[in-house]
Image 1 (cartoon, rainbow, N blue to C red):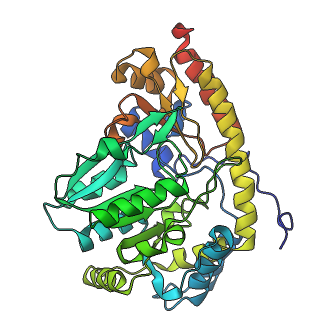
Image 2: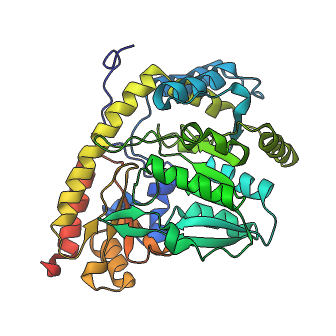
Image 3: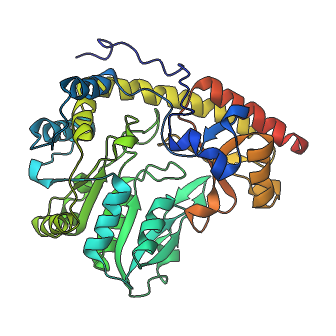
Length: 400
């Protein structure tokens, strides 16, 4: 199937999600005091305001048309689609038995923490990083050892020299976010090898969360699947992947733990059984439809559109003195540093929520190093991104 044998997706279509009981639009007033019916813009929760590929919609409609919603059984097309996607998009050969299915990747992370660490142990996070990790680690009674990323040439870099003295002896696991959220860094081959070497040296389980690996923007460095790059890491490696972020089907709450090592896989499978975890009916068929040639063409169109949004947003932010948007290589989550304004975080958040009427994620929740930042979700229509830029320029107009 060639690139254009499918209808081109219309990412400019404005779809009103208010009142559909979605978190992003219907929960923002409670979270930020930003009312959707007063023109509020939702730029916080990391899902997209776009329809998924038509094949995914057809898969849902086929199940609904059948009208019987019994327990799902073995689903070979689902496993084959995951394998096809990893081979064709990432050059990574995955065996069907390596694939475990969790209720999304926060759940996948939590299952790794539960299986491979004990209360009182610690997990290493490179901060600032996606806040869902810290939430499940702390809720499980484990500690967090923060490795603060450093900013060099305007982007995040690993700091092995600076981190050398931060280990406490309680660490049993490192969770890598690759590509990194927030900040959008695509880690280089050398950086990924360093992570694997560090985990081997300190006998840490390595959880590589690659949920954004399909959302690398045009002109950015190529993403490398760590499992493919460093096959010798297999005895300590769990790779987390999902179609849900890529294709905007996050509500299906389905994600994969891909584990080559039989011992790690056996231990994880036992915890899945102990906790009664098995996938729901709709998600399996949605993923099978998404990971396809039609889905691939849709993603290629998507990342081009997201890159256009990024350019509009970055130009607008660059026009406000004291604001700096980190160069985004992957993800649709702009990471803006307000340190140059000299304003307190509370004042920055007040201006964004109250004056600009935008719900965006405050950086402090992402851990050490995030305090002066705010994360903006750009996965919406170009018109909304343009409106957000205009409002930000007005809200911070006194800095001109």
